[in-house]
Image (cartoon, rainbow, N blue to C red):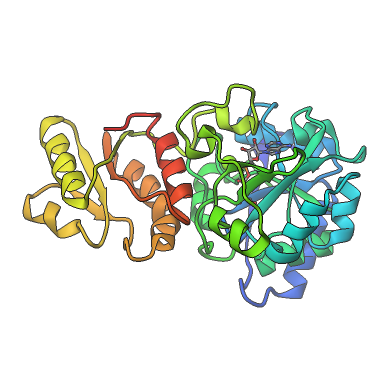
Length: 355
Ligand code: TXA
Ligand code: MG
């Protein structure tokens, strides 16, 4: 598909997320086979996919997203034969992760095979691979008969898309097909773990938590500062980490504290002090305090289940942009379980503005 970027007509196709219609999957797989770009749902966020062996299609992904060429893509597979195609040296640890966690929201970095173009890996000799748990993603890869390389289906720097509307906002008439299968399940991107070293290292926290890695697979990972979102990657471990990310248009400040009361009090003070249109991203447990104080606030979900916060996070950031909010004041969370991934994204979205 060699359409120029400015006269592409995007086709939007609804596919059932639980029982994907065979004929529709087949039709979309033809787009992949012909070198087209397809936005598809995964259990984490929507991906922007292309045949991972088609270098032209891969380069087009970078162009439409405005993505720096040294920020590599994740290769999505639907079976372990595909894993053996894209990696020549699969460590035993990678198989252990695959056995327990795949299909699922964890990406494993290992040595790439010759078949994988350097365009996919941002010139690295390693490749990031995952088997997604979403029925539509799995069926699409299967029918396409090739691994699908895909970054998140947003414009570079923006929050990742968790529903088809987000993809449409960013990429309509820039790509060939957008699959609409409703909301994604987790709402934040996959965990990334590098198994090419003696000690596995966490490159990005995600829905498959470090606690689960320890308890279910017996892996104790190293958590570098970049994985918390505290510092920039010096030697780009996961090259994507050095770029500003997940960022709404509005400025954002992340409010920390020793207890909820302290966080709420600080957030209210900031909202009163800053004379711009601001909104507090609160929680079900704290929303009423802001309402009482006549401070604009919306809830991200409940602190009793941080997965609810993860699931809503990116839509709420996008909502703030739609409302043309100038300052987002966001509560912080405990870095346990999925909380580690939430705080990583919030630190990055706030560009380090933490009080
Ligand atoms: O959940 C997800 O992972 C979603 C869905 C679509 O699968 N994908 C996603 O892709 O979040 P993306 O491109 O937005 O993030 C991929 C991250 C980047 O930070 C990139 O630097 C890192 O993976 N990465 C890819 N290949 C790598 C490699 N060989 N070594 C280290 N990091 C790598
Ligand atoms: Mg991304």
